[in-house]
Length: 236
Image (cartoon, rainbow, N blue to C red; front, side, top):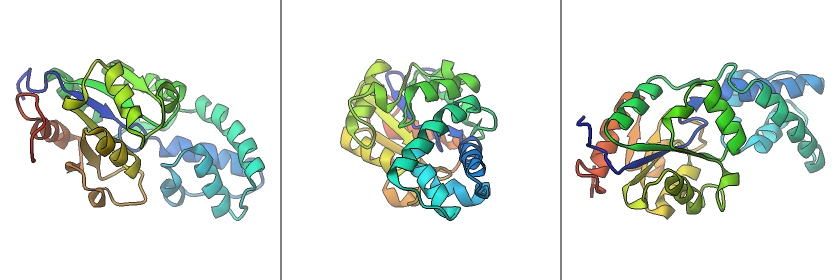
């Protein structure tokens, strides 16, 4: 890929389930709460589908699966315990998906500016990316607290692209869920979905501009979507 092939492009990424497999630490924190409450821990493979709708929903689904549905006030109290515990182990077992960092380097080498657009709070996102040594790849890391509204509201993606110094005419969102798809479509950005993320709906059913099964496919997908001259391609 030529060194200026993606000049002017802004590639924004979802975080959990897209850049990083955070399931081990999220489920590890959930299981710590379950054990504290005298409930059995959940296997990772069983609890992984509970991820993708925020920590509160993860807690609610986890406790229901363990046989103890939660009243709203109890869910809030557990959420208040969850966050500091999770922050303390945020990068203990979480890892970038295979090939992720090489793809980020290839995109940057081709002239693209990279950003993170995530519904994970900004402080947790920065802590995770710092812990994994990934923060330096991104011109902006924008959680919902740093935007007018959270994805799927398009203003979240627009805020992330603007913070990175880009324009929506040359922006792509790489994500894994309907939340990402909704934000990209509403903002008029390109949409690339990964097939290995956290979603109740298969990524292929969300109508992405491109679907990738591995990060090695991402640079070419971005190039096809944006076009070699930096404009949005009509079709892939």
